[in-house]
Length: 512
Image 1 (spheres, rainbow, N blue to C red):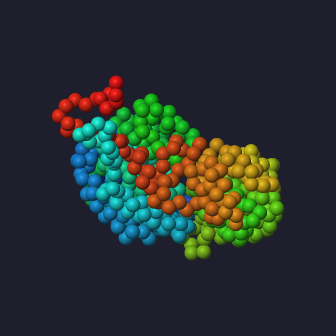
Image 2 (tube, helix red, strand yellow):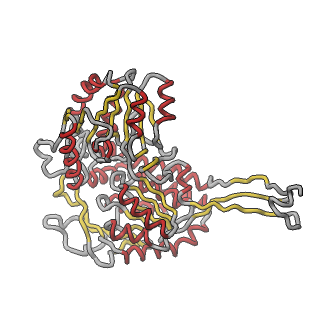
Image 3 (cartoon, rainbow, N blue to C red):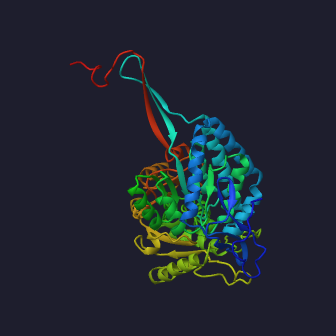
């Protein structure tokens, strides 16, 4: 479906049939200025080349920003209900192509097919939600303190939005950002992760087919240092939305602060599941397995800590260990696969490094290395791994590993569980398993995270609620829900005085 251009460089040996994709600028697919490309590989079998993509530079970013600037006046002036209608058309196209997009996603980033379908569905859901905002971009009307005077506030678009997204949700997260930006009347320059550029190209092609005018949506592929930095530094991009690791987020924040840009950051988590001594342990095991090892632990909301009451810790592990060991590892497109590959070799090395360090401080319960099964040797696979006896301040319990590694922390009671849960630099998602309503409501109050689940895992956010975290998990802006519009709009207050005379607020309406 995506248009291709002639390869800028020859394909790798044995992979010459893999297509080469261009940047999407001003409504056209085009090569980068340098003509250099990079390959996207299947993480389940790195011999499979998904395609070649433009290794762009600041010059390509400048062209995309210029195209977005030129498209901005007309798109901004388009009535918001009409912008919503175009978005409804896009949502319908996403739904129509859901299976094909999900299979392309599994091939490029590895998550099992059922999860890839959920990823696309999340994009569909947010597209329909934000399309409706085309008729609900509400402001406020309020009484004036003076007679014969009208007071109201309205939302207005900010301008060209820079959208920088990660690889782990290559349809959902771009939609989280693109949909509110576009329905509010902004134009966008989209820089996708270099591990999933094919998913981004398919997404942008559907946006084009849906009827978004040329220049409204632009995509530039390439590295973060070359493309991402240029996008953030551009004086003509007043708002940036970024999802990724904390180190990169802090660097972006420094650049954006110098130009007083609007900036939304979503920077990950070190999420915990608390299991109390009155919990339904079978339900807790289900929630832990899904949260810790779904998407191979490669979610910002993945549970990498279980904080369990010491009275039931052994019982919980007796149930958790065999279920974890039995999880089927393999390519995401295989029907029986439950745990797919990690995204690349760097991820494997990072996870392995944390596991080796963890062996010195805690007891490994299961997993701990690459699976030995024949047929997986060309992929980036790692076994679901559980450590017991982890201290709350160990690196295993503090650092975002972003892989299938779970730390079990034993505590004597609720107060200690709260301390352990909150004692990290992150504050994205948390959950508690308990049968006691009073304990559940205390957890809702006490857990220092942007998302709290009761008797469920730490993953599974729904698009009509705000998504985001506290502390090192972000800078306070929220994605999804109606709150997503706050990132991409400015408030304007308007006063209309029809009294026929000068009225001075705070003066003429007060005695003396």
